[in-house]
Each structure stands twice: as structure tokens, then as C-alpha cells.
Image (cartoon, rainbow, N blue to C red; front, side, top):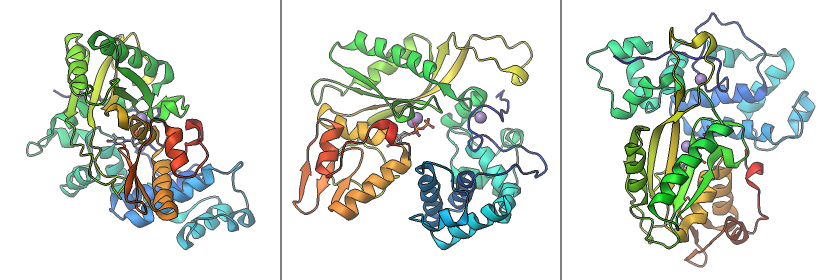
Length: 371
Ligand code: TTP
Ligand code: MN
Ligand code: MN
Ligand code: MN
């Protein structure tokens, strides 16, 4: 039987499944309010307003201090009418009727709960909700629902993988993969990317890039790493996606488009990382390990810089950078390449700095990319 427990207090408030309590509201920050609105639009597949609120949250984040007056709010860029109205309401009364309505909305709460499971996206969550399902136990007890492998692992390791990963745990995972890589070939290179490269203390997973010294030599690398992890008995889940990369294809316009380099989504068993589970602890649970989500991507060496820039994130930073490239420079940028539409040619890069140079931008340090 699948076992799971709910955790409401580990990682960031908005990432966690909502508390099923009567709607008693703590004072919301503007940023949190915008995130709730964005997520609600995402659940309704309304990309325009969703991105508008994400951008608004990002603008607030970039400010040296919190916006506390309507006057300060008036001068901010990138804010539409709707955003301004919500902002005004919160600055005036300390709360927003619209946001509170969403937070206490049964559909929003259920979709948030379901999408907190690894492998469950908005579409699946919506489908389960439409069938009248409201809790994990109802989903798991429903005979007509077929969970795919990823979702099964998502439920099985729910407690562990919804708990934040610390920097020390990310380092430990990095060391395990690094050892596996060095046993396979001496000339491969492992690079930590994602939120931890941006200097974050906690993350929801560990993102790593593995490349060989020469283009083409990376081909079997991921499969061999996976084999090694399997032999060590620490591979709890693996979805491997072979490369579909085509050097002649133009970079994608759409940010959420598929990544073409070989990659895998893993759940690893990390030994010696027992977290004090406190009240959440199941009776008699004294294991000395936790499950950790790991993403591995393996580009050919000559495309490494684009992958590093693309996977370092944040998502909002990547969106903004690609938008800037397209609108200000007539260039297409994605995780694989940079194409100059005026010159009609691909621009090469061996470092991230080369890419910023092509875009006519000063180098932006990873810790400055937390948009
Ligand atoms: P995430 O790991 O989702 O996010 P994060 O590391 O910034 O934050 P967290 O601490 O919550 O893990 O994604 C990191 C970057 O990887 C993000 O900018 C998008 C990119 N990415 C792709 O480009 N393609 C993919 O298939 C995946 C899974 C991620
Ligand atoms: Mn959590
Ligand atoms: Mn990450
Ligand atoms: Mn990731």
C-alpha cells in the first residue's frame, strides 16, 4: 500500500499543501498575494494574467525595501490595472477580498494539494477534482485511477520530497554523482546549477549538469550514471529522456518548451540525512535516510554554457532574459543555443559571459538572478 503523510510546515508557505483550516487570514505580503493570484490563473490555464502577476511579484522582489504606501506603488513599472487594484486594497486594508476568496476556495485548495505531488500537473489535478476527488486517500482508493510511475513515486515519497533540501544535502548528492561520474570517465565534469547555484539555502531538488570534455563523448554518460546509482541501491525512481537535440533547429519562442538534451528526473536515497520529523514522525520511524529529488542534464560540451545559463534560473529571470533577447536584440535564446535573427546565424559561447556579451549585457552573477 502507498504510504504518505502530509507536511504543512517544512518548505515555503506557498509551496506546501494548504492547511485545511477555516479561513483565518494572516496578513499577506503583496508578493504572496500576487503568487496566489498567479497560481489561481495557472490552474485555469490563463497564461496572460498568470505571467502578469508573476512579473509583478518579481518586480516587488527586486526592490530594496517593501512597498508600504500607495505613492511608492504608483511609480512601479510593469503593473497592470488589476495588479494595481489588488495592491491598493492590501495597502489600504491589509487584506484582499479576491485573494482571500481564492485561498478559501475548495477547488483552489484541492488543486494545490494534488499538484504538490511529484508527477501531478494542473491538468491531472483538474481531472481528479472534476471526478469529485478531494484528498490523497480518495485518489488512492479510486480503482478507476491509474497512477503513472512518476505519480506512484510521488505519493510513496511524498513526505520526503515535499520537505526542503538543504545546501549540505545538495552537496552530499553532488558528491555521490561526482564519484559515479569519475568512476566512468576521468574527463567528465559535474556542475551544480538551479537554485543552489543562485546561492539559495534550500531548494525543492538538486539540479546538476554533466558534460564530457568533447562534444559527442557525453552520449552514454547519463545511462552509465543511472546504472551506477542502481548498483549502489540508492536509485528510488528514474525517468530518463534521451536527447532529441537537433543543431539546425532554431531556439524556441516559448519558455516552457521541452528541453532537448538528454536528461533524467531522479529520486535518490540519501543516507545519514535523518531529519527530525517532530510531530510528523510516523510511530517507530527511525530510518537514517531521506529521499531527494535530483535533475540531471547532459549537453554536448559546445552547448554547455547555454544549458548552464538556462538551468540556473530562476524561471522568471530566464523568461525576462529571453524576452529581452527577442524584443531588444532580435535574438532567440533557449537552453540550447542563441540565434541572431538579423545576421541569420547561431552565436557560439563557451561561457555564460560570452552569452551576456552577445546580448550586450554586463555579466549577471547567479545570485543576482533570483528574480
Ligand atoms: P527548478 O529546479 O524547478 O527550480 P529552482 O532550482 O530554481 O528552484 P528549487 O529550489 O525550487 O528547485 O528549475 C531550475 C531551472 O531549470 C529553471 O530555470 C528551469 C530549468 N529547467 C529547464 O529548463 N528544463 C527542464 O526540463 C527542467 C526540469 C528545468
Ligand atoms: Mn512541504
Ligand atoms: Mn531546483
Ligand atoms: Mn529542477
